[in-house]
Length: 181
Image (cartoon, rainbow, N blue to C red; front, side, top):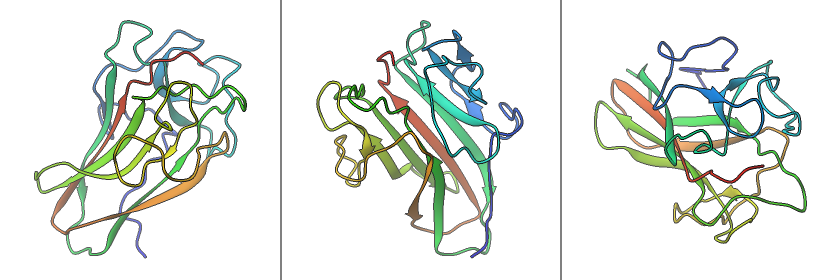
């Protein structure tokens, strides 16, 4: 298997390697959407198993007057000559055990488009379908968790990408992650 592209967020790539729909932000506590090593978000926010020192994190994304939907996009990945494409990433959620805080409409969806075509969902995370519920994989993209739960330890999740072409764009859309903690 060949690795075509990798993004570890070890250096600031906003505007060059990736683009966010709003400028990255943090209030230093519980409202953030940014590349971080954990020092720029609340000390209560704890995740483990980071690959390297940095990761991209989001919480209470509308807390500082931002929209309820924000995106991170990586454009122009050269896939010429490759078949059987897949996406793999490391994912975690600041799991505070008994107090799960994703609301019924909170979700994170990863989509791809090839050669400027339509965006196609390949991977999604959602709540269990009610307020303050545990998030996890949404394998059928209906906005309700039906797969493994996200934990506070980063773990690999993969998804197949249908199709071939020359250029692949990847987009992560974070919707309604508006609850604090």
